[in-house]
Image 1 (cartoon, rainbow, N blue to C red):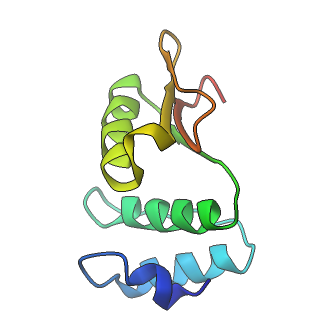
Image 2: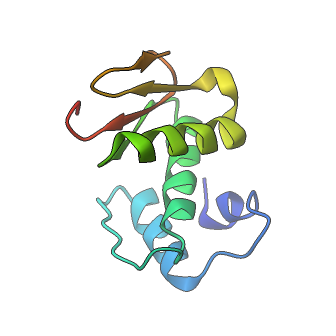
Length: 108
């Protein structure tokens, strides 16, 4: 898998900081991205999820709030397919054996 191949699935070009984060992730490094709202952190997470799924592994996508977990579940279902995504929060468990499980940090 290459940065270029993963970037090709997006309908927009990734910025330099997004490509650099993805490059480090593909090299097996841990990546933390701090950027303002709307800067494109979700694109990095989705690219990392695609790379992880391509390796035959599962994805745990954490969020700090239940409302945000619900929103990210909706977004991941749109991008990766309804059946491949699940949710686990303090009071809801949906398809928890899915390839991608969105969960609040309290569950992790």
